[in-house]
Structures are given as structure tokens and as C-alpha cells.
Amino acid sequence: MRKFHLGTEGVLALLILGLGVVLSLTTENFLTVQNLFDLLNNQSVNMIFAAGLVVVLIAGGIDISFAVAASVVQYAAMTLLISLGGGNWLFGIALSMAIGTLLGLFNALLIYRFRIVSIIVTIATFNLYFGLLMVFTGGVSIYDVPDWLYYAVPLIDLPATRGSATLYLPVAVMVVISLTTGFILTRTGFGRAIYGFGSSPEAARRSGVRVGLIHAFAYGWLGMCAGVAGLMQAHIVQEVVPNALIGQELPILAAVVLGGATLGGGRGSVTGALLGVLLLAVVQNGLNLLGVTPYAFRMIVGFIILAAITCSNLDKLLPQRAMAREARS
Image (cartoon, rainbow, N blue to C red; front, side):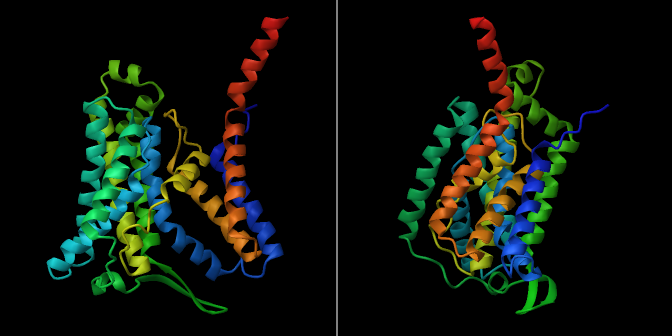
């Protein structure tokens, strides 16, 4: 008989479902269309980040500069758009994708060409991007964004208890990026090469995998996602604040790891990354509705991440303990 195995995605889905049941019984507003739509609207930017970051983790790398890169894209794209008369959605998205990709490719160049460990490179570029951003902007925000970016773009509008519940454009952008990333990773030979390279870089190299191309795609794709996420975040808050996204990188990295990706590479999925973000969002939303202090959220998130990573490594720990017992006997 075939053994039934839920997998990380299945476990996360069950956890979210269980939390949803508990919160719907203990709070009045959790299981409302308005609250669920708000959850998706608020988490769409983080999910776009997660869809890009999981590619880097699967390829065996790590990047903590993507949130700062998104801030750089926000400011650079907005400054250029305003100087050109405002632009439009098509030009704005294309420009943000281009700038974000270039920033990601810069990371890839340093990692591949100079053989520098990815976390060192991205710590350096994190500080480099942030320093340059603050020097050139003086920490001044942009409030006069173009009209096409200022006004919300509703996709679905349903009647709700407090007026209406609306899904906005960032959710659709998140879905498109997630589906595209998932298709590349699971339905193409290049996606399988990324998994292979993350699992065993040396074996992949000997089998003819183009290492430079893997690095360029992984970090370039994350940069592109960061660019789009930065534009969507500016659209949501209707302004560009240089340090608004600083500090988002670690919670998103934790959510992607929670979703099954490993820092060693070769494992992970877009679905798992999105569910990781959604699980933390449901926990935070539930604690807010229950009136729990925000400081407790960080504590609980830390506990959830530790528990998830410990459970995912049990298969590695148990054989070692068995081997130790055999050695002692």
C-alpha cells in the first residue's frame, strides 16, 4: 500500500485551516469576506517577495538585500517616471522589473565571478543600496506619485458588513508572478536544473549545467520580483518612503523556510513559500483580533519557525542518534 504523505505544503494548509477554524470560533471578524480580502491585499507584496526568494534558496543561495533593492527601485522608478511626465502602468511595471533585475544581476555577478559567499555579498549590497538610497534621497519621501499609481485598482468588489470587501490589483500581480515562477521551477528543464544545482552544485557542474546562468536567473528573478513588489507597495501606501521596506527581509526569509525551502538548497516550492507567508499572516491577524500585544507575535512566530525547522530536520537527527547508540553498544 502506498504510504500517504502530506508534505510541507499539506501540513501548512492543515495548520492554516485549523487556525482559521479556531479564530472563526473565538473572534467575530476573522471569517468574513472583508477580513480575508484584507489579508490577501496586505500580504500580496510579501508573497511576491517570497515567490522570488524561494528560487534563490532552491538554487542554494541566500539574499537579504531584496527588500532594500525594492526600496531603491521604488525611488529610482518614481523619480524617472515623474521626470518623464508620469508614465503609465505598463511603463511603470516594465521599468521596475528592469531596475530590479539589474540589481539582482549585480549580486549574481559578484557571487559567480568572484566566488564570494552569497550571504556576504547580499549583506554588503544591503548596506550599499541602503546607504546610496539615503545619501541621494536625504531620507525624503515622495508623496506626489502619478495618478495611475495613486488610485486603487479594484478587481473584485463584494458587499460586506462594513460597506464592501474588495480585492485589488496587487493580488492579481502576485498570482501572475507566483504561477509564472511555479511553472518555470516545475514544468521546465531549466527549473529542474535549478533544483539539481541546489542539491549538488558539483554534480550539476560536471553534468554540464551552466552555473553562471543559474546564478543570473535566480538573483535576477528575485530582483525582478523585488522591483514589482516595490511598485505594488508604493501603489498600496500611495507614497514612496525610502526605508519603508527595511526589516521585511528576515520575516519573509523565515516564512519561505517555514514553507519547506532549506538554506542548503535543492528543496522548496512556490506553494510552500506562499503558505508560509499566509500562515504567519493568519497568526498575526488572529492575535490582532484577539487583542494580543504585537510583541507576542514575534515570540510566537519565533516559536513556530523553530518548531517547523526542528520537525523538518528530525529525519536527519534520528538516524544519527541510532548510529550513536549502535556505536556505544
